[in-house]
Image (tube, rainbow, N blue to C red; front, side, top):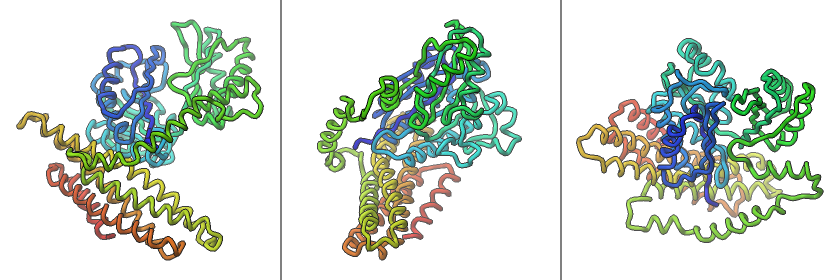
Length: 490
C-alpha cells in the first residue's frame, strides 16, 4: 500500500492572496507532494492548506511552507477572528494509508527540531506528539495568543518551547503535532448578535460541559452580516457532525435564532458524510461498502500493489545515485522488523504459548510500527542525499552553497541515525522473545537479527560519512555519541 500522510498547516494570513500563493508555491516545490485544498478566510485572517505525500515529502514541504511564512507574515501587524500565535500557527500530520500515528509523531518531532534550529522559531509539540501533558491540547498551547506568549515565554517555565529560543520574533511560535483527522465545521446563524454565537459556542464545546470532542468559538462574519459558531470536531467518529449541528440548532433556538447554513472548511473524511447521510436519510443496514468510490479504491489499490512489488529493487539497480546504500539499509531493516512481527504474531495465536501472548502481542505491535518507519526511511534517505547533490550544484565558494551543504549534510545524517536506532530496537526485541516463541519459526527471528545488524552497520557508515563534513561541533558530538551507543549494543 502506498504511504500517504496528510498535512494541514494553518497560516495567519487570509487577506493577501499573493502571500498565500507564495507559501503554496514553496510547499508544492517538493517532489511527491500533492496539493488537495486551500482555504482563505478574511474574517479569520487565516489560511488552511491541505496536502499529502509520503513521510519525507510532507516533512520537507511543511518546512518550506513554514520558512516562507516566516519571511512574509508579521504577527505584530496581524489581526483576525481566529486565535493565533505564529505566522505558521499549527502544523498537524495525519496518517492516511500505509502509515501509523507513530510515524506522524516521528515526523512532527523531527520537523520541530529542524524548525527550532534552522528558523530560530519556538516550537511546541502538541496532541500525540506532545512531550508534556500540559501541551497536548492546542488551546492550552496557544493560550493568550501571540501577545500573551510573547510576554511569558522567557520567564514562565511552563511556557518553555520544546525546540527553539525562549523569545518571540515577528513570526511568533508554531505548534507541530500528530492527530486524528479533524473537521473544521461551522454553523452560521441568522443574526448579527455576536453574543448569541458566543453563548451557543460555550454551550456546545466540551470544556464548558458540551459535546465531547468539540471545540467552539463565536465569530463575527461582518462581511456576510451574520455570526458563526466555528467548531473543530476532533473525533468525528465519536461526536459526529449531525449531532453537533442538532445541538447548535436547539441552543440557537432558545434565542429565537435559526441556523441558516453550515460549512466545512478544508477537506472532510468520507465516513463523516456517510454518517450524516445515514442519520438524516434514516438508512437501515447501511454499510460503507455500499459506496461506489470505496469499492473502486479497494480494487485500484490491489492492482497498484501488484504493479509496485519490485519497484524499489528496480530503482536500486538503476544507474543513478539514489536510492543507494542508505536506502538499502533502511529496506533491510524494514525486512528485519517484518520478520520479527511475523514471529511474534504467529506465536501470539497459538494456545500452547498463552503464557507469553501479552508479551508477543506487544512486540508484534511495536515491530509493525518500526517496519512502517523504516519503510518510510527508504524514500527519506534518497531525498536527503538528493538535497546534498542539489546543494553541491550551487556555485563553488558562494556563501549560499556552504549554508545549503551544511543543512543538507545534517539532514543526510538524521535519517540513517534514526534507521540505526530503530534497528537496534529490533535487535533488543528479537533477543527478548527469541527463546520464548514458536520453535518452528525461530530461524526466522534469527534471520531478522542478522538483517538488523547489517542495516545498523550500513546506516552508521552513512552517518559518519556525513558528519565528517559538518562544522556544527555540537551536532557532530551528539551524533557520534548516538552512533557509539548503538555500536555498543551490537
